[in-house]
Length: 233
Ligand code: SF4
Ligand code: SF4
Ligand code: FES
Image 1 (cartoon, helix red, strand yellow):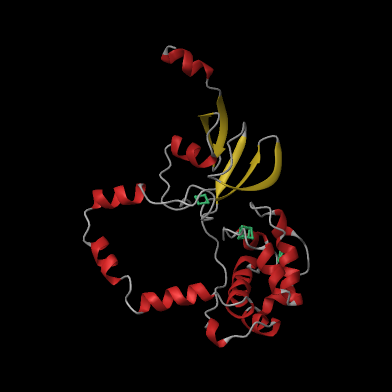
Image 2 (cartoon, rainbow, N blue to C red):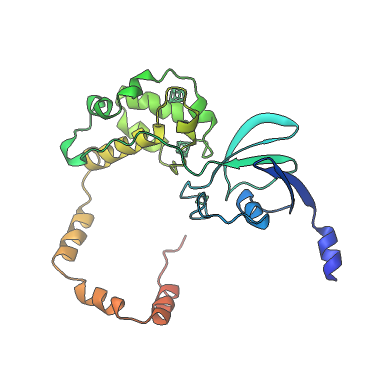
């Protein structure tokens, strides 16, 4: 098929990036559309696979002002989409030493006292591109139900959108991370095989293998990586 015919078959979509009009081929993600339009993504782009949360994006449509939230690398562009990326959002990030804490609500409130001001507006849930029931895990946090917080927040990619939309200035994702840490450290059973593996590492069992890898040329390392065993799905 001639190149012109192929081009003819590609539908071009009108979109608006930070209010500037562009035309992009149908089938791109918001992220690849940004690059198609000449944006060099230094911020707001990481894994490109829906895991890092760096590409949080707010969008609506010229015919519908309702705000939607998505990850730019996972959301397809649509006709008349208006997009703005939110690469990061400033939130409170208290410093704490997990070894000095206990897995209690009081300790969580000691670090995030504003947790108690959550009034259940549900903005956080509505803004989550991962479709996490954020408000629910915030309620579970206040009840001290750490297993529920861990389970409900497990798919969080730390994109920050819930914090951006919270009228109380809370950062649900940071609160959930503290609780997952407390849950993992104090409430889950100890992993025996992990302890054994760490002990082996500390005793130097893998030092020689590690040194060998460090002195292996890059090409050979790539070959070893490509040939590695991968657990079947
Ligand atoms: S819980 Fe918050 S930070 Fe986590 S993915 Fe949802 S919106 Fe992003
Ligand atoms: S947006 Fe804030 S106040 Fe509203 S439910 Fe979520 S955490 Fe609570
Ligand atoms: S670039 Fe990592 S989630 Fe989109």
